Image (tube, rainbow, N blue to C red; front, side, top):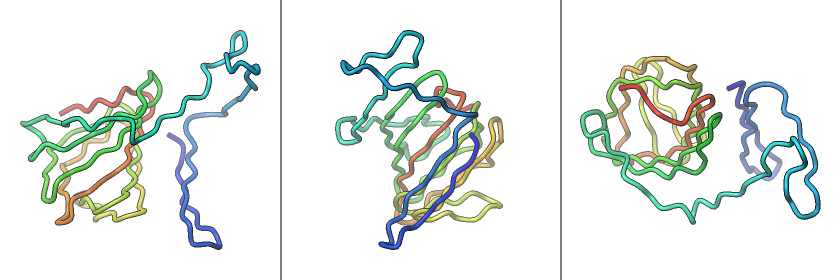
Length: 155
């Protein structure tokens, strides 16, 4: 994953711009919205409200279990909305792809790194070993984007 930059507008609205991988190339799709010959699959829209929450178990590594919505899973990209209960402890683990955490509610502490809060982003390279994480007293909801992987973690 290349980079993430947060920006604010004159209206006080915050948005994020993400750069993933190398140069992207777009080709316009025909009027019927089918991909042109040799083109990448067409753009997909996922509505968070249409995706059901699932338990994110790993009982031996996540106490108590959290909830997740897998919004996009492909060979190159994984996008997940994760919700953790107050005081959840996440055991040591790593991810096989670069990963970006964007906190949208609450906070989660990363030992030795501090505690990102709402609007903060955290990026870590693939195979970086986390010593574990602790969710704050209000719980935490985060968007996780992982490149080069289907979203798995190595516990």
